[in-house]
Length: 294
Image (cartoon, rainbow, N blue to C red; front, side, top):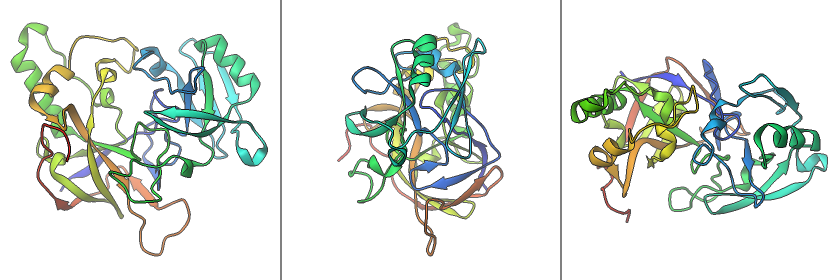
């Protein structure tokens, strides 16, 4: 039986991960996942795509939504959670063409960001219902945090093992060292499947919660970035994924999920997922095509 063996939360988009033993699931993702992000002067998100060193910034959220930030050099600051209800300034920000309002961190924090990270600003999604999921993949009312597009991302250890084997077989001249799962920045990691099996899933249960599997995750240059050092390196895994797991015109690894609300459950918390939870496949379908959707 497949089971959940990895659980990861990224408090600030594109920064270092936290790996708890359990996490609450909310309609827009795991509690505390990507509720903060860094933006440029236009309000557009900034990620490891442009600044691979962002992955070295540590962020730890508090229960009240506040945040502690620490640089690799040890500089630290405490950031109170801003929000419209407190009268804090809202700014228009953008993630992949979708514009929405987020609350700006206080002036002291912005000065700290400028000193240590340059010309960026920190914003907080105080109301996660403001950003809708792509309506091509979700019903009305579905929302997402500041993740690239969907509430959760799932990967499997079997697919990573197969990918590493393919890289080693096809490019022995590179002296390939197996890539760790951290390169793919998932929320949920599942063990006990066949390689690429997740690409046929349409609905799954993790513990007591059900998730719709809505879209393969097209991968980008972040997967070539060492999450422990911030260093970019080589063409892998994108070269091999483009050849062996090209879905919807993109080199793909992992699947995006949207949680379903359990019957009789109200409020922001849908339930909890835990390391060791059994994963049950409820519905399957054909692998997405290599070409465009639709």
